[in-house]
Length: 410
Image (cartoon, rainbow, N blue to C red):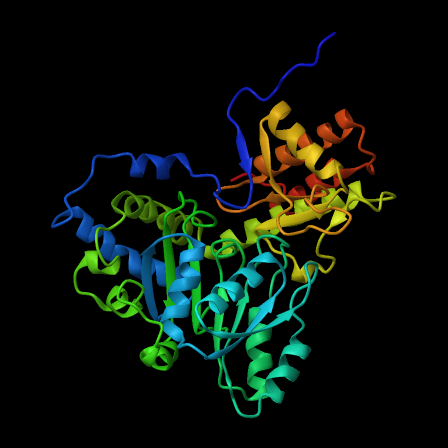
C-alpha cells in the first residue's frame, strides 16, 4: 500500500479509567420511557438495590445515594462528618488524594496531608508514627484513596486500619473507592472502614451521574453534630427514608436506577464478587507483563508503581517518556480506535504536560480479548511511531491469561 490506512473505523474502545464501558444490557435496561415515580415497579426495583449495594461494599451498615460524581461525594462526606476547624489527616498517593484534601480545606476543615508522592502507596509505619504522636486525639479522621486514579497507587486499607489500631487512635477511617469498587477487593466491615464512597461510572459500569456513600454507626454518631451538614447532603434521610424518593432527596435518577439494578445483578449475583476481583487481578497482571517486556533494555518505559502489591487492579499508570506517551495515545485513538487515558497529575519540570505518561484502564465490563486487543494496538503503535521497546510483550501478556484461565472450556 502506498498510502497509510486509517483503521479506526468500527466500534471504538474507551480504555480510560472512567467513564468505563457500559454493557449493552445495561444500556437496554435504561432505554425506556420515564416511569411513574409515585407507585409501581420503580418502588420494588429500588428496594431491591440496598442489599446488593451493601454486599458490593462488604457491609451490613448504612448506604446513601446521591445524584453527582466523585467530587460531589467528597463534599457529601465532608459535610456529614466535620465542622469548621476539625482536624483530619489525608494520605495522598497521587492527584485525587490531594483533590479530596483541597476540597476539605476549602470547606474550612484543618487538613494535614501526608504526601507519599506519585509513585508509591502510603507507608503504614509512617502513618502509625504520626498517629502515636497525636497524643491529644486531635485528628478526627484519617482519609485516603483506595486507588488513586492518576498514579494507580493502591492503599492497603486493611493494613491502614491495623496501623491505626496499633497506635490506639480513635479517628474514623474514610476511604475513597471511586476507582476501585467493583474492581479491587474491598471489605468495608472486615477492614474496619467507617466511611466509603464510589461513583457509578467506573467499576459499576454505568454512565456518570450517581454516587454512593456507605457509613458505619460509629461515623453516624461522630458526625451527628457536624457543623458543615446541609439539608441536601445530609445522609440520614437518604439512608433511613421510608419512601424510595427520599433516598435521593428529591427527584430520583430514574433511568440510572434501572441500569444500577442490572449492574448489581451482573456483579453480585451472576459473576460474583470473588470472580470480579479475580478477573481484574488477571487483567491487571496482563497489562503489567506487557509493560515489563516493553521496558526491557528501555528505561524510558515502565510502570509507575514499582511494587505489585501497591498497584491498582482497575487501572495502570505507565511512562513512555515525553513526547512518546502522548504520541502513542493519539496514534491508538486516531489510527486504531482505542482511547487510552492521559497522564493525569504526573507533570514534572521536564514534562510539564505529562506527555510521557499514559493510563490503561482494565476496569468494569472488560475481558481478556479487550485487554489483549489494547496491548496489541499499543505495540502496533510503537512500531508505527518508531518508539524503541523490548520484545515479547504479547507473549508475556497471553501467558498470564492462559495460566489464569486454564485449558478447559466453560
